[in-house]
Image (cartoon, rainbow, N blue to C red; front, top):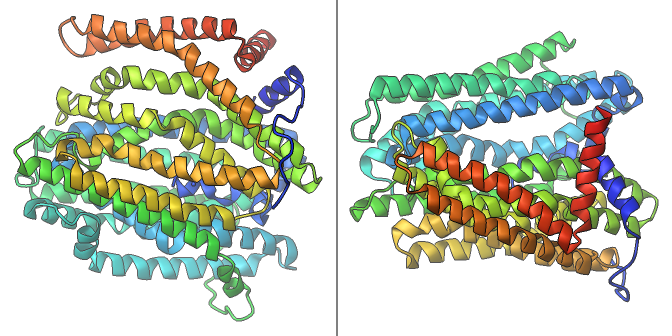
Length: 594
């Protein structure tokens, strides 16, 4: 569908150059988005290349992956709701979130970046070039990765106390003890996260896509069960001071057990695909060392992303503790509420923009190979404007309905309605950052299409400096209760600064970025969304008079959302937003075709 959208817009508008006279010259979102499958110009994009020669196989693989992604996100959403009910958003929730964040941060910093940016492309290249089809390289790589993972995991578990202090320096004594005990179990995930990663990469190189997309569902289901058991065992309102070691053990072992199950399923699928592990450590002349040395820029990018995570976690956890110490209810003042809001914030991008990016990357890469940077510029402009057709109204709707929506899904068990409303207020600020976030991600893909990983890494340095400076300033100057509510502004600053710097660089390299047309489309989309926003606000205010929490939230969102969508479409058509009409025509044609 994304290709059809791009082609439809391409037919609907002339290819003009709105920014003549420029001299041609020469994300953290989620570092996981920067893996080899997303970056053209690297060998990693040859993964699954055989599938391209068989349309039926490609369609089946795409369908399996799409279904797995949908189910994985759905079960992940349920997992978050269950954990919110079990642990709440106060001090115990912050302890669990921090302890569970550390293993992923350690893994990404020490090996995850290498796996995504170096080892997988290296493996694919050797499979194509070696006489044995890369079999020896696979054995060496699998052996080395598992050994390194084992060493890192053991060291991390031994340093659990210090790792918690690094990420959460102001935890209360009972909160620190709970987080440390949880971390001793949860840090064991490092080995299994890595095993899942290398097994998934090797499965993809064999054109086996189903297991890597579906295995996380099992992980989510296990954690959902563990969260429900914890809630039944302890009841709502458990605190770091009242929770027992056995209850924390259930939580820690259960969470790690989900990751273990995911890894076992993936390794089993790898063996079922024909791989037989024969440990090899004869690394001399294998090329692994040279491959690692080429990863400097990506490792810099990963390091900056992890530094940002460290700053955010410290600021949020400290704010939560300070709010509690000042006698305020700490729900919504710490890292747990911030993460729950962040997860909702990224959903529109993950669902909408990623699909457009998937279509854009090979097109832009092909245009670069043909020397047609003018077409790269056109595809970037179309991709951003098409993403904005849905992202702009959704971001406005998130601002309007954030509080009732979060109350509806999170106000259960240990999370009160006020705690859930606090998550909604954080989401409102996050939603305002959705367009800068999307713009930055698309700009990074243009750099990758140009074969440039150095510039994104250099852009990340001043962008992260701006984020860190503002985050720390908020911690020092704002009331503890408001720090996390305002923290998405610091998060968005990273993408605003990064987008400005990336825009300047790309404008020189591809002779402009169609800025006037993009700005006009965004302005018209926001103007079209304004009447819908006013109507939605009126519905939220009106239905707030209805008793209870669930019914008012449902009525406000159903009425305001449905009518607001219709109003947006009508106003957009009246304003002449061609992207909206083109998108609607494409959807209508596909429905009639079915």
